[in-house]
Picture 1 (spheres, one colour):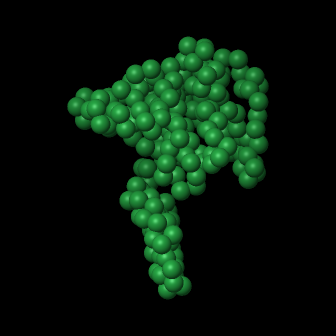
Picture 2 (cartoon, rainbow, N blue to C red):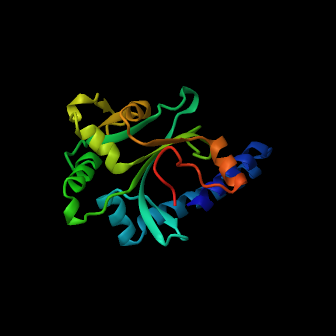
Length: 213
């Protein structure tokens, strides 16, 4: 999907430069083709990837080839626009149909450590400038177990429940500062840090939070 995102960015630039109706139609036709390809990918993902997402909450994997190990990542991306980032990790706590939420599923796994159920090792919440998701404002990274145990200690009722504007249930928002003040390791990553890390050949994004490879 990274390729599709890059193509969308190129199309946005082409649309801004389009001067005739034919040029605009050409750009829109290409955009529609990309949208159909993305839809097919979502519908035809391998069964194991769908299961990892739905049952274990794993959206991606961190591969550490030098150490020959890998771990799962739960990722949430939110567009904030001019409002700025909320600097929180959000956890869904109810669904309109009453189905199990990520809060229930992750907590059950954490409470049954000997049974070996899959759990995303890291939880990442990224705030982007807009709905194109091409420019990051800031991201927070935390160990999933640390996040859920932090909420579970005082209990879910200790956190304010927010209702999604689209009616898709309720969620809680756990502020990064609140976690850090309680001794939970959180790494806050900004674009400048990423650039410095890449250019300097260092892998230090998680120095103050979860360890990278």
